[in-house]
Amino acid sequence: MTRENTKVIQVGNVLMGGGNPVLIQSMTNTRTEDVEATVRQIHALTAAGCQIIRCTVPTMEAAEALTEIKKQITIPLVADIHFDHKLAIEAIRHGADKIRINPGNIGNTDCVRDVVKAARERNIPIRIGVNSGSLEKQIVQRDHGVTAAGLVESAMDKIHMIEDMGYDNLVVSIKSSDVLMCVRAHELLAKQCIYPIHVGITEAGTVWSGSIKSSVGLGIILYEGIGDTIRVSLTGDPLEEIRTAKRILKTLGLRKGGIEVVSCPTCGRTQIDLITLANQVEAMVQDIPLDLKVAVMGCVVNGPGEAREADIGIAGGKGVGLLIRKGEIIRKVPESELLSTLREELLHWEE
Image 1 (cartoon, one colour):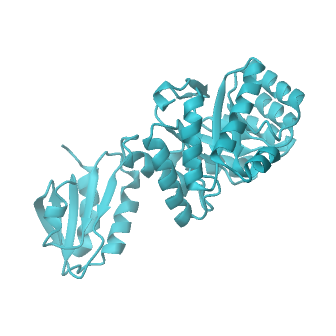
Image 2 (spheres, rainbow, N blue to C red; image 1 turned 120 degrees about the vertical axis):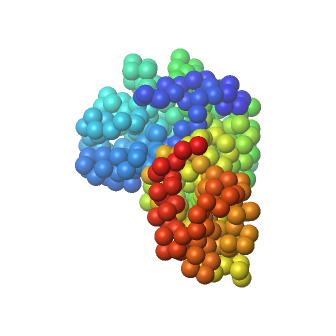
Image 3 (cartoon, rainbow, N blue to C red; image 1 turned 135 degrees about the vertical axis):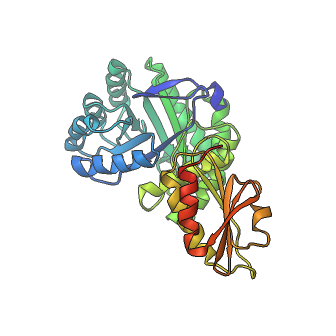
């Protein structure tokens, strides 16, 4: 089932599935009980492009805090619950737009039924989450380890359990830190699952290694038409998750808007501090709402030609810089003014 054909689910004020745009998610790393800190982080993530936020709910105090958090944010809030079904019910009562549970660790069948009853009363979606670290022991023992097929089997069992309780307002996620296993699991799941799929590489690692693993894994999965929401899981500032997710989606043509910066890899002809300049440009364009490609080149010999496919670009050498538009040199400026000149051009951009 490709994303165009999955069931449409409403989460707060957004729709997922059925060909709707792939949504970017992240998770707060504050104590949910600390409303002020949690709201502050959600605002920062929202400004960066986060569209759905997940908060852990390990205590009743955290569940109760959702009421006040919800009053102060503009994006849907997902409550993440493990082990205690009463926390899931309380989170629903306090305004969660969706809950994330693993029916395998939330309690017995009666506990799951109570959660489903509470969700049905408010028409709140349930995200069924299964990952390689929580796969049932009997499946792991039978398969002599975690497998893609085992992850899918577990997820489908949970789906059928909740469907048998008369509820189908569902989202599904299956995750593994093994990138290729995760890809294979999603390929298998998509053949059997009609519900929106949340995709991610769990425990991907640090900002550097995790971004690479997530880009490879999510890139393959999304390119195959699978996935309705994504989270890039990184050991670092959650803002980095949003930046990486936006770049993955834009690279795959699944998201429009935002300036794309391309730059040459430097070589012996480079006569300016191109590495610093390229990083400055990338940071500088974050707040400019244009859908453009900006080239940063370190050589005035090949710069104009290499930047031809970009909407606008700069190239420099020996203290002098060129401003280039569609491959044509517009202006020559001192190297020290390249960044400010480029920003002015972008702020006053006209086709």
